[in-house]
Image (cartoon, rainbow, N blue to C red; front, top):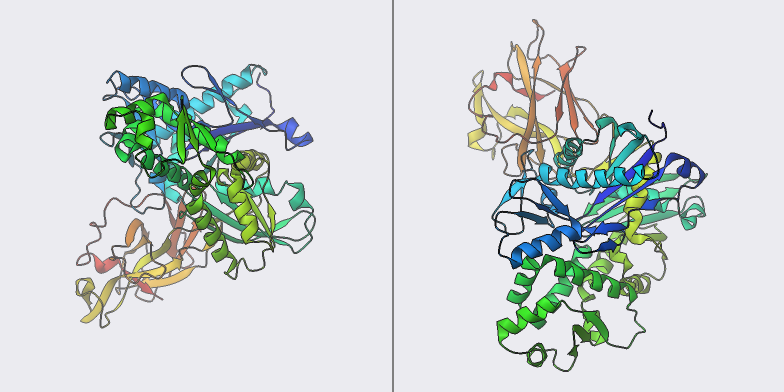
Length: 587
């Protein structure tokens, strides 16, 4: 018989790194901070002891799973060395293909490292989730007997920038991996980060009325949440936003751009494509250095360089690596010894110039907004802030703010997701990535598109008017039903009307025929026998975790609803010259 105790497992599949952590219910009840991180990963040669693994996966030619993380990178490197990689699938840095796009479909595919082959995103994520799930279950079963599927509650984190469709792909990937829907929670990274920060002693001791900002910077995204304490350790959400202008990947890109200046762009491109295991090894060493280097250091930075990188550079330029460096702009400031690169400290610090400038500028602009002007405390979480140089720059540029950087800054999301699984907040919020509305018809006006014109009862009308229900950037509570809007039929004796739901990347779109608008779905609403042009049609919208529910009905009648996730593949079925009999106008 299975144990009734619940084990909450959080999986954080990041752009560049993946983590998972868990805690048992009785441990959470006695000490919420008692969270176990998986720190044991296979790397193809030995065991890799670290709380995260690279987000990369290798699939066999038949598209079945082979390996994940460093083990996948190692195996793919071996295939490249033997020139046997063509039929295999190696994926890395693919998560951002799901970000903020109206064109996302359930069949969305992502390219492998070659860019020549692709597979459905859902299948790629399902392979990763299955691997992590099976590894987790195996670890638990070493110490606890007789656990079944209901013993676990799974929390998967997703970026705030993802819309309904992207979250649905992850949800379906999790179900494909064998996780039951009732045991699955999809949590925003910002939700998890805030949950983690709210347990910090520095936050718990804040005075009532204190406004504080949780700033989470991941690999390619920024999540901002502003909250206010109002007694008894409770918080009120004041502001929430997300963006893509900076992230940890900016630091990594700056580092590889620096290496390209030394070894050459072509050499670095071939190295990162064909020597994936060595490339990840290089990133690991860089991450160690960025956590240790301070502004008071003076000694050169000693970095381990993969021998294969030196070899590729020597083959490309026909000279020794030492002689090659003497002909670069870093002559006299960079030296080699065995497999080490000795870099003058000032040169190494330049790698962080752009990331620091971007972060400081972004935070400064936040404090200029009305929503953030009263913030007195800034909590910085995410791997981006594990760099001491970046920490010092934030403190220097914002001396009037209280800066809190938790010791486990890079693990805030995965640990917060575990806490979230044990105790989800009573009210959850989302910042909408698009404007939502429906297509209506009104009297034709000067400037309206001539293609939208239709004649009804000898009058000119304009079809395809975007009538806004909820705006882009608006913060909404999950499960909240928005104000009902009222419409009426365009024609005198309609048998039914069609409510067409659209999304737009514009704040105030005018027409549903705009290239910035996309048909999300439609509802056919049957009308009573006595319905006419003055019959009232009610339309309301409600947002859930992974879907939009739109309800429509004749006033005081049973509503018809649609659960919408992905945009329709085309808008072509909405012919502006036909079928206006089911159109509606604003009441």
